[in-house]
Length: 136
Image (cartoon, rainbow, N blue to C red; front, top):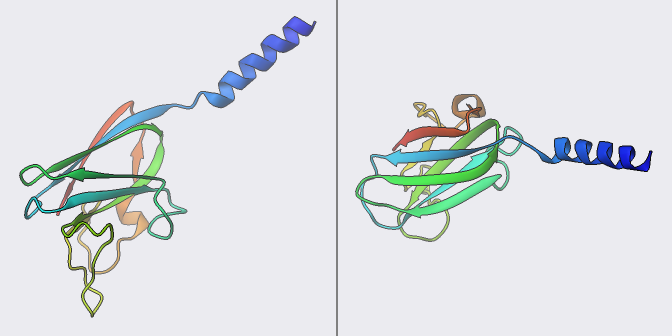
């Protein structure tokens, strides 16, 4: 009986621990120059541009593109925001009127006339290997 209970508990633990994950490759295109780096944040609806990103990474620029690979991401719905940190100060710089000084982009490449919105940026990760592109 103890053995059966132990095996049942192990099977339940594996179900709880086993979560489908994916690798997401994000290609950022149309970057104006190779100065600085690209900072990327991937968010859930709850954290989108309100808190620290759920996943983040910085990468060097090669030519006019940069590629970010995020591994072991649980499948689900996310939104991405990224910017060209041209002066490498680890933050987005703004003009006095609130307009960004540095290039930025959002998943799904919406035409923006204000801050990015979750409904415009959200996308699904439901395959083992996903690829998206963001244009500046």
